[in-house]
Image 1 (cartoon, rainbow, N blue to C red):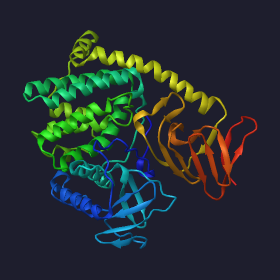
Image 2: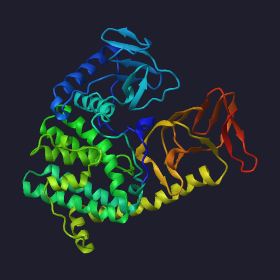
Image 3: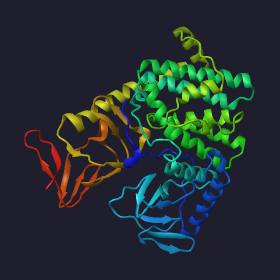
Image 4: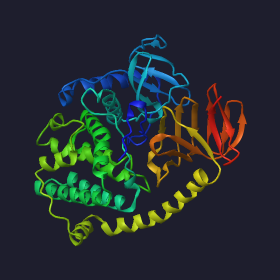
Length: 434
């Protein structure tokens, strides 16, 4: 399985919150910072540290920045209890960690800030944890979990999620234990279809799952509210045809952690980037996984809407296969634009991404990226990121006006020193250095 290190700036966070976005005003932002500061300071025992630090809220439409700390270069101006300014054009806007003007910032897009306090604190805590997770021994890694776009990957992940939902909703210990056992059985069965997938899933759970769990514990919800948040998360990522490739860990690890916290409050201090979370939780919950017998797996699946899930995934497989074929013809087979990547940083809507076998990942709706060559904005998607982030493929250009190149669904703004040329042998357009 491939590892992609997030220290180069890749992070996808369009589905890290489930609250409604709020219209931000400078007078309110100071309160949001104070709420996050208070909540993290009251939860220092969770990781034996207070990880509150520099946060920047960025309006993606205007590039206006609102921060809780002054930058080292003096670009930001004090406005009451916060600092304001404009983010330079070369810096990608996303929910991720960025080094800028002498500080390491947790960046949050203003259009993703929820109105409800608990959701907002959860989001701030999530991104602040990303800022320090390397100090705590967790690498910034996002692996390739494209197997979760395949039918058997999706079916048995959905069954696992249904079992986890039952586990968090019931009260009797025996019932919790039974549903957890079944959840791990479905996981074990799924991973047998895809050799090496257990390691890839583990990396994402260590990166995003532990981070989301941290936000849940810090955000100040009551037990009943926490349970309902976990249930909504499980139901939310299964809505429609959403991809699980980048999103499953936001639901799985928080449930495991929340249930284990009832008996072992600070269990999280006993893990690091080398921990096999599946084995860890199985041992902590004292689960004994029986041998996998196909007939028994099907019987257990029937308890969790198995027939309905299989039927839904069969239909999805048909439609997704046709969609991938259509995109592959447009972005690979037929003439297209190719952009070599050097230090790509991007944010994208991962909820409907597609795994194009042997090619990479297709982002269908929103994509915004930056690299040495400039910036690419595709508000309606249609972007293929080739495996390993070596290259981006997009549809043919419609207009070229100086450094601005436009396609049907995208705008490419090239930095000085780069241009776009047509390759006569293939018919493709290629971004090259002058």
